[in-house]
Image (cartoon, rainbow, N blue to C red; front, side, top):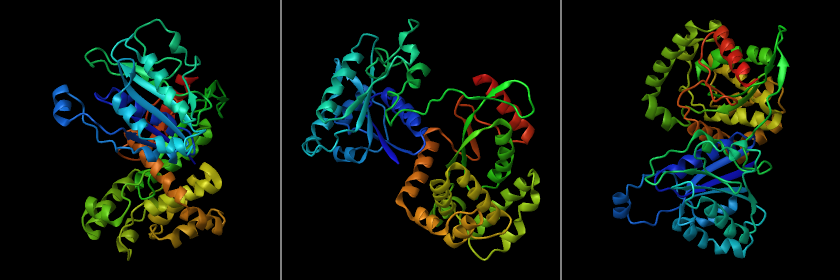
Length: 420
């Protein structure tokens, strides 16, 4: 798994907005784990308040953290044609990494914000490259394959040396969609996944349609996810969809279950009320056994162990194995009233879909599997996914509205024609 750090300093939120866009792009690459961290503030709080600095709750980085990543994307505002002093002070503290060659060969990219079109953002990008080259890092820029760089219409941030935005002299100008669409150099492990739309003829004949990539956020304990999963399976064949499965764990522990639902008995009754509503609109109501789960002799399970199992299946057999195990675990949960927080139950489900038992046990215990679950949860936060199922069409940014298969089909057809 490739680990990417988006590291930034931001006073008024412009650089933070760019950082979140950079992280979202990096997360779109399969097998990438992305962290966002900010540079520690050095300005005294009274001065920050007087100047109107924006509060930021992003976790703070330490210089020693940098060695753990394969690529680092640095973001800074412009201060008189150079990086902010906070960024410079942070890099000055990384001398120990330089002495150990700890950053040699890692990929670096830079993005910046400045107050005006000619306020020094190109100088900031270039001067920030200098210490990174002393560390032995490989610099990725922003090539002219990003065609908007040659546009003469309006104010555009960034340069071939890195992405950027123009904040305005008073900081009132927000990053534009063009600014946020910029990403590092193709070939850099921190680049977004960009692909030319593939086209295929629909199974019923007719015009060529673009293949769509969809991020499907789900949790095995979610009854609504059960309803939409079977619908998306039929539509995936019809539209040749590229579905990327993302684990969205509603509650990851008994403690989180208690905080959300109260006592185990209260949790069961409330959640089973949701099951009943979901069953009423399901294509397979016979597979949602509310009474059996009500009588089950275990506490209603959280979804973290099952998320690990699905990611373990993905590590063994790719997206198809993830989906197969997800559906099998949901069947065990909804139709068979089994405790899917029990690893033995999960191992049996993995065996049922044909996964090698020993490989599955190794994969579910691998720390990289837990990292993959956390990467999906982080992707959900970046994309502001707050409820599931959530299906985001990567090619357009649109979110499918859950409903009957004919409604989903209409939404997919419209999206396919839009990107064709």
